[in-house]
Image (tube, rainbow, N blue to C red; front, side, top):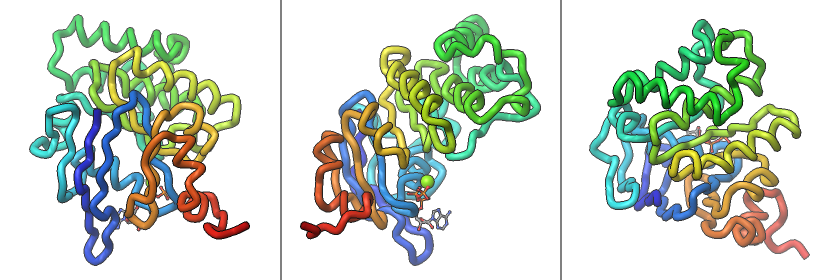
Length: 238
Ligand SMILES: Nc1ncnc2c1ncn2[C@@H]1O[C@H](COP(=O)(O)OP(=O)(O)OP(=O)(O)O)[C@@H](O)[C@H]1O
Ligand SMILES: [Mg+2]
């Protein structure tokens, strides 16, 4: 369970997140909202990349006192809107680099990398340099990086952005396996509402840094406030 309690982030005069509270209890949860709503800022705060006010907990543990590096060692993984894979390294070395930062023995690290490669079915890509991968293959490698080392929280920022429908469908299936592969709580940002409906049991909706809805995804998407803010439907349209 991931708990946000009054999470507030300010950039100078801009309040990017305004006292957001939500308790993500499901294995996979969504965060949606229009451009600039504060979705990535939420993930950046959870990552420890920004100063914030409020409390971020996982079950009974708080991550507030940990810097980003310590949060990774503790069990936080994420992907970014643009893949963060190192182009001049092989897929295998990219995965190994994540494992190398974790407090594991050499054999445990190797086992974790093998598990990620097997789980994502990317053995044929393992020795390819990341620069030779297409966008979809990079996303698979990114997902592999996220499941290494028994993570507690995984955050995916637009994992299917720019992908073809068939690729999105397949990546969605892989994301659905994350809870059984890792036991982590997973948060997903995406503009693809069909994808969010399919893989996220519960969803938080942000708009201008405020929480406008939170709950079961189907209920949230049917909420007139969400339709008005996000789906471009007039709130009082008949
Ligand atoms: N480092 C920063 N410095 C100043 N303002 C920022 C910074 N990062 C984000 N913002 C502002 O905070 C607000 C929220 O941005 P954020 O990137 O979280 O939006 P988002 O919901 O992820 O949007 P998108 O769907 O376009 O990715 C925006 O007004 C943005 O301009
Ligand atoms: Mg964003």
